[in-house]
Image (cartoon, rainbow, N blue to C red; front, side):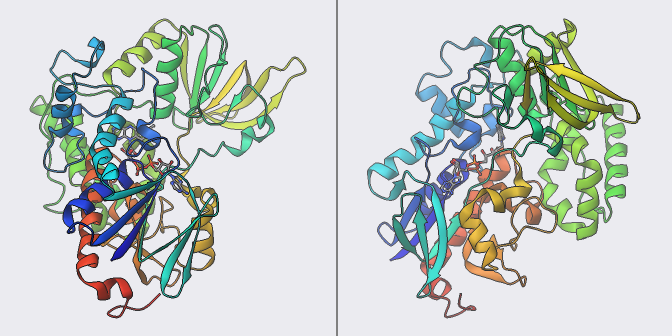
Length: 472
Ligand SMILES: Cc1cc2nc3c(=O)[nH]c(=O)nc-3n(C[C@H](O)[C@H](O)[C@H](O)COP(=O)(O)OP(=O)(O)OC[C@H]3O[C@@H](n4cnc5c(N)ncnc54)[C@H](O)[C@@H]3O)c2cc1C
């Protein structure tokens, strides 16, 4: 029997386990998922009870079964959800339920497999992974050990890493380094002046959450470009544009083609949303066609713009932002952080330099919240098991710094660029290789692909024992 150990049971780990269990004959493969959270399938994005945290893609496109887009919608209907949440339903017929509900949906798909013993759920974090006698040995935080033939790493989102300029605020009770921590926003008073660092999806979540709690104090939201995540199209549209007929070979030509396509779309009465949907759908092939230096250029110069157009906020969150902008209690500023300090009265201060300007101004606040999102570039430091694998040369950061290096089959690439046959990178940490791999639809498709890889390994034992490939 082949033992597959999956490290991380968020959406990715759960989806890999579900698809693998369906692909291999019962009792031929032992599937063990390590996940410290109270349930499988939710992960950082969907393990939330905050009612303002909503999925940012309509429910009809969030499915654990690629190709069956309505799977989540049918589950919602079967359990009578979203109940008591009229806001979830939009006038155009789309549904944006609370994120926690999506977590419940994924958990409900894997729960029967766990109760039948087809998937084992170890409610612990993995602290170390090593090699012994040709197998992997996983050690959990409590010291328990498991020997496995194949390991799948699905620990996508590390905690945020506060910008260096904010270091002097570290440890101060009114410096919130991770707004996703349990009860992180609870101590913020309704009138508190908040300095929010980050204007993307996490920042939008914080603003919506504070607003729902009755917060009316001034929020100054700062990011280098001052770009705020956009909302959805006024009406649903089909993706528009073909970026693969003549794939761009430079970041600049991709930008030009995108601008031209947006203009062509506008002439037909179609909004930019449809063009970005096409870019997202074709994203993996667009990315693959770009040479590595051009991928780097794309990330360095265009990522901020891509992120705010591609990752859209739920309409309910957009409403909250618009309300705060309209009543003047929210200001969004493009600026860089220069320094920070704590006054004698406990007030926090941050020195800012406006984008394109020279002058440095000091802003004071009652609370500083870091909303820069998960620090994927620090994944090796954030995960001790990855740090020890990196020290052994078995995993490396990808060339762009988006996650872990892997080949097109999802196998980790070692220090010398060779695939490690039995260590797979699942989830968005593989996006250095695959490009667009963060939104749920793409993550779901990739999880099914990884499960298919695992199933073929389980069917061909030599792929697992390494007799047909370089042994590790
Ligand atoms: C706040 C947020 C909201 C999002 N909302 C949407 C959305 O609405 N729509 C959309 O399409 N996409 C959304 N996304 C994108 C999201 O990244 C993917 O949809 C998906 O959730 C990624 O899941 P994952 O399992 O790969 O990662 P994660 O959610 O990070 O799960 C990894 C899991 O691994 C566990 N873990 C970590 N370390 C260890 C360890 N050492 N041992 C064992 N377990 C460990 C963690 O506890 C966690 O549960 C959102 C992302 C974020 C961060």
